Every structure is written in C-alpha cells, then in structure tokens.
Amino acid sequence: MDRRQRKTREAIFTAFIELLSKKDFAQITVGEIINQADIGRATFYSHFETKDFLLKEMSEELFCHIFDAMNEEKANHRHIFDCNAPESVFLHLIQHLKKNDNNILELLSSQNNELFLQYFKQNLGELVASQLTLFESRKSEKLPESFWINHITSTFVETIKWWIDNDTRESPETITEYFFLAV
View 1 (cartoon, rainbow, N blue to C red):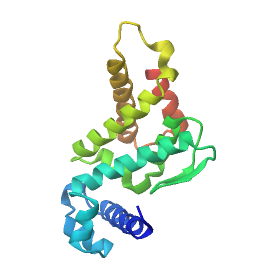
View 2: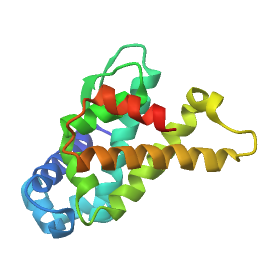
View 3: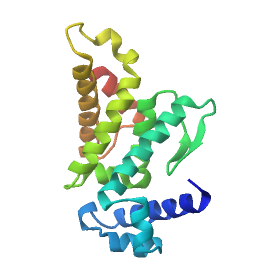
View 4: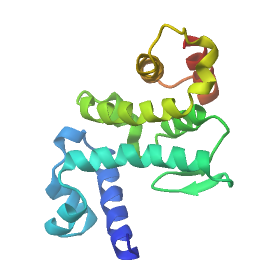
C-alpha cells in the first residue's frame, strides 16, 4: 500500500472512530463516513466493500497490532492502535479495551454488537491458538484442540462482558488475572 492509500485509509478509520464516539454503529451511514473523511464515495469503496467490512478491518487492525507486538523485538509499534506492549498478549488487549482505543468498548457493549463480536471472536481465536502453551497444563487430553480454543475464547469474551457490565472498575492486570483463573 502506498503512502497516499495509507493516508486515505487512516482518514476513513479516523472518521469512522469519530462517528462511533457519537453514534451507534447501526446508525452510521457510509455517506456520513465519506463526509467526515472528506473523500469520494468511489474512494471509500476502493478500500472497503461496505461499512461492515470497515468494522471487520477495525477488528483485524487491533489483532494485527497485538500479533505485531508479539513478534517485534521492540515494544513500541504502530497501527491505528499505539502503545508500549506488555509481555502478556491478553493484558495488552485488555489495556487497549480499558483505554477504549478507537471506541472499541462501545462496539463490544452496544446493542447491535453481534457483527463486531463475531469479528472480534474470530481474531481472538487466532490469538488464543498462538498462545495455547499458556493453557497446556489445564487441558484434558480428551478435549479436541478446536473445542479448547473455543472455550478459552468464550471465557475471554465473557470476562470482558462482565468487566464492561461492571463499569471496567478493575484494572487490566486484575481482569487478566481473573481470565487466567477462570480458564
């Protein structure tokens, strides 16, 4: 992707994020995103097929950021998410949720969150699969790996839902600890 395309994509993400801070995902139109980003309709569609694909890309961007942080030697990395990564990928993810980077909490807690939650869980499943050694001692030999990954992913999602329902009072470190105790 060349620099111009990257800038346009960032403008679209920024516009989308600004709109998410004011409105529910279901209420946002492609026209509003286009106006906010100050781009043409054809430009939007050359980057994203639909508003749903934009949402999917936002979820993928978060997890790409997490995976890149895992694989880079230096702790500071950049996507549409920016931070200094901790050792634990799960703590890293929860820290972004706590900071509410790019209104991710609104997407997870909104009434129309099914689509984002589907994308979130799909990406989270890949993250869990890459971290299975952390849970090795707890897995029964009778469980298929796909079931185990689904169980850990679901436990993480339910931990985050509980945390959101309780106004994210606990620190990311505490929630990460709860998650590991619950698996």
